Image 1 (cartoon, rainbow, N blue to C red):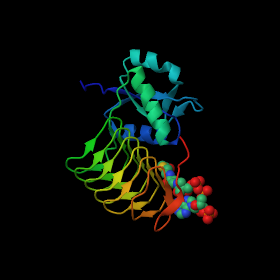
Image 2: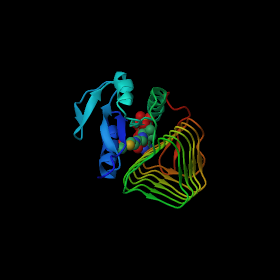
Image 3: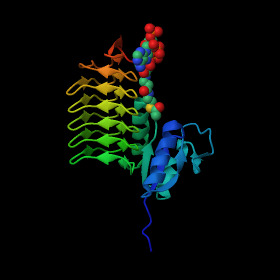
Image 4: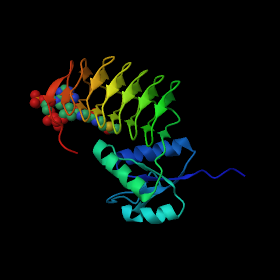
Length: 217
Ligand SMILES: CC(=O)SCCNC(=O)CCNC(=O)[C@H](O)C(C)(C)COP(=O)(O)OP(=O)(O)OC[C@H]1O[C@@H](n2cnc3c(N)ncnc32)[C@H](O)[C@@H]1OP(=O)(O)O
């Protein structure tokens, strides 16, 4: 008889929730127990039932669902959702799409998620609750701090450092060795040639400052 796969719950029924359900379907090593949402508006996500709001978390844990994932694209909201799941008693496993590629010695911390076609080079360090989105390229020796998001198709070249909660927009390219500060936002398609201060928003080719303080989460 085949061993039963561990059950997992997805928190978030929005666009990123759909992408995470899709990852788990492709993965096949988890039993998708359902989706919960702070304010449910749909009955199912890709055929997986939405079980209700977060008031159901304790009973779902008691029913034997020990793992969960905060599937929320916004970095601050994802970290807050992860804290609620941890407080409720859920484990936050690393989620890897089967079509993601990982080099030797990649370190992935609790709750990190790597979507389809993303590639992570050798000895890169991926922090807690980091989202490496579809087709992103994170080269060797990069360091990504807690809760950062590397959007689809972005390229972090060798040894780039991304601070906590920073967002690297779709298709942006970051030059080797550059540091992007905590909470910074990099516009879609930007070419980042030099360090970006914490909290700044930059965009363009080459990237220039749009504003020094990102809006609060
Ligand atoms: C699966 C998924 O969907 S993951 C989601 C991934 N998300 C992304 O990649 C989005 C990244 N975000 C962006 O690129 C945004 O446009 C930001 C954060 C750079 C700026 O957003 P806002 O603060 O709302 O700026 P806003 O749209 O008002 O534009 C301000 C100015 O910057 C310009 N601008 C905005 N974005 C960019 C960009 N990516 N590159 C170049 N210029 C830009 C605008 O044209 C505008 O110029 P103007 O003042 O001369 O008219």
